Length: 166
Ligand code: FES
Ligand code: FES
Image (cartoon, rainbow, N blue to C red; front, side, top):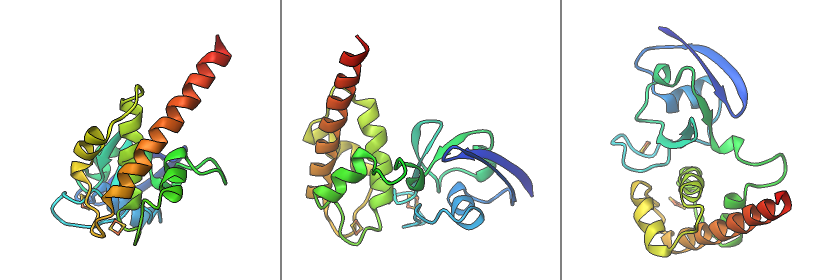
């Protein structure tokens, strides 16, 4: 057993976990953050994606002890109180979900993707970058639409902020 101490959604948390405990299980079972899903046992589906130190990571590919000392954001930490994150809002507006099982992972992947492409995204890039996320309802068309819309909204907002600061 090892001590695990990390920031999760801006809060310091700690616990004890077996050395073999995966980050996804630590988040779900120790912290009750069940928005991060487990959709496979082969690291293929992406339902478990969270951000670790600002980068999208499949939390079934990392041990909880490896994440100790890191800052983790899960789907539960994305909204600002009652205000949805722009990616969440875009998924809602563009019907980017059906059963919703893949949605937390899709959204965490999308927010990372958008932040790495502040100049904007095109459809081919979004589809290529979603390679590691599987939607079993095959709702890719609207998922891609939602990500493109969110990318535009966020680029506009950051241009607005830059203008205000100038
Ligand atoms: S549960 Fe992590 S990739 Fe499927
Ligand atoms: S919305 Fe059902 S798996 Fe994607």
